[in-house]
Length: 235
Ligand code: SAM
Image (cartoon, rainbow, N blue to C red):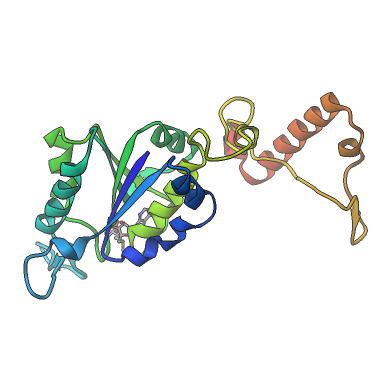
């Protein structure tokens, strides 16, 4: 997969060099290009924003500058990419969306700041046909200062679903929200050695070696936890 990230804070994406995502790049499974939006400005102050039409507080990011940056990325694209637009007013991100994003060859993230990006940017690229899809996505019902953290969240959830990124594929299929048995379930409690710690013992069944019983126990515990924390998933 190829990922292009356009931002006024390229340094925000330095965590992508770490852990699974970093290894995925080293292994050639993911290629990342980070673009500084200010390098597409034409004035000497490198302005990326302007006052909102209609008045109100804050500044709006310029469609002109975003258009220049996005068109430059499109020129380098080998296949039609998907445009991902982090915004609190988009569809709320979930595992199903992560699975969908992991199936694409090329994602382009445009990361807003201030009051956000001039709405004509999304409108234009929805109409232009240069992207195979334009996805406006929120990572939750709260407002961040910029799209970079949201893009990191989306990329972390998406990249671990790309074939070969995680060594043991089972750890993905056993996760909370994974398609199949875990679709509407949260994972139950998990333990490792020692068998006893601070007076707390690992449940006997997990030491029994009886795989059928262990599977049933895990299912029951997942259900208990889901009913406690996310009852609406079982509704
Ligand atoms: N005025 C916008 C609104 O009320 O919807 C909020 C703009 S926010 C301060 C600046 C940028 O942060 C947004 O353009 C978006 O890129 C990002 N952002 C903020 N909250 C987000 C969220 N919950 N999910 C995804 N991106 C978010």
